[in-house]
Image 1 (tube, rainbow, N blue to C red):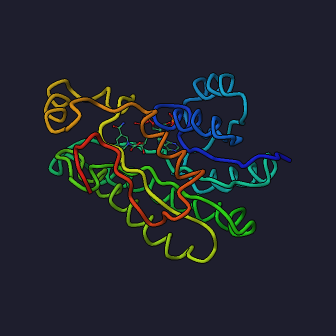
Image 2: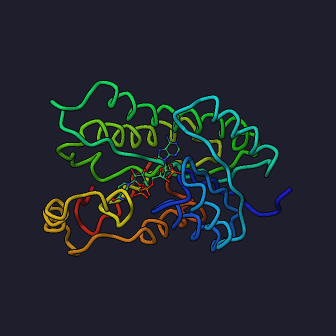
Length: 242
Ligand SMILES: NC(=O)c1ccc[n+]([C@@H]2O[C@H](COP(=O)([O-])OP(=O)(O)OC[C@H]3O[C@@H](n4cnc5c(N)ncnc54)[C@H](OP(=O)(O)O)[C@@H]3O)[C@@H](O)[C@H]2O)c1
């Protein structure tokens, strides 16, 4: 068994998730790098951070989540911090988006809810301690044309944070969201330059953020922040103040 606190980061192989893995190892956690498709990047990250393990699952598949929780039981026997970072955006305006694409967007939110439920029951409620950190998004608060279902799911994630924080009151389990603004990752690389420029015009600090700048807030909520629960912490360079 591991004699360190364990943090599980979903979508941990890339972007903001990978930065969270690095930041949490630096804070003394044994880190579970969860991935879906990015096996090679997950393997390389583990070689870099050393203090951790790999775990694979498609979080839209409930059976794979069940298998993942069973594996976690064997690998570490505990999860002290869950960072629900995995996310994807399906981009199209309402007139061209198909119902199947809407369902695909929604399926991940369902998986995040189910994974959280399983981790709470299997680990955190048994040890009467835990932190759940949901990575939502500024667009869940300000909206974004061409991303209606994504913005709906991110707003839902913040509502989940608030409800779950209340359900876990008195159980020593803190639940918070970190809502990034525009951050330099694979997800934003896909944006056309004119869209990026338009966004930057509204960012007080005049630049896109770095994954580390989200990860340092996640690390704070994972380790410190003992009087913070049910909150959405906005990290967006002044794009939106909350
Ligand atoms: N970048 C931004 O500007 C920004 C802004 C606001 C919020 N966010 C949020 O930050 C989080 C991380 O995004 P990122 O920017 O770092 O982009 P990213 O590098 O594309 O990361 C997304 C991660 O989610 C995982 N993932 C996607 N669908 C999954 C599924 N069905 N099952 C399991 N894992 C799945 C991916 O895993 P695999 O690669 O292994 O498939 C990937 O590691 C997301 O929740 C995103 O919505 C990002």
